[in-house]
Length: 307
Image (cartoon, rainbow, N blue to C red; front, top):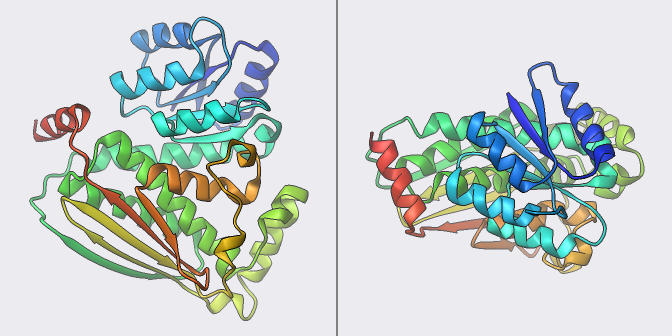
């Protein structure tokens, strides 16, 4: 996999690139701003772009917009710094696939890059399939197993691809939103591991989750996934068997001031990438809706799929 890291700060480029280079299958390249990144993309197409937001000549928001228009299959992960929160929200709305606060690069960058690359690879493969499906009703009951979570995301992306509900870039973003909802159901719902613990002690967060996955009552809980998919819209319901929470206590994820809060990350991505997100009163089920939008990019991608 080829990853392009874009940042005008030499130190931040080295930090991000070093973290990504630890993955044996990833080849990391660098650019100092959006303009140089596009020049490199003309010569060698990356599988993923990881970019800063505030840069000279062409900033991260402009880069996201250009990639969305010209390279819709290449996902972009933002590196956000204090003071760039409002631009980051705009970039997510314009087409970026995910984000990582710069102060948490060491902890989160490689994991998020892998998630996005996995979703992107599944998306590219699914567009090669041809199917005349008019509607599809799907239901899964999943054990607490993250490999099943990743598999069901790929399956649901493929189902959306078959009915050509949205563009390829939006299918990737849909996959990111679904994965966030499922991962929340896994960790916070069934295993009752708080996101605040992840902020305080990254290792303890995952160790507690591993212990609880083998203990009563957590190990016997399931994640319930249902989907209704047609060429006009897709409606997903994801329910865990945990005690739930009060949805009214969620911070406003659209407020840039909350971009750096770990408890709002998944909700921000879900609400940015989906047309509607609703929690049930118990807080243990979320309904996500994606509606069809006919645009030039979508039409072009559909024609490519026919080829």
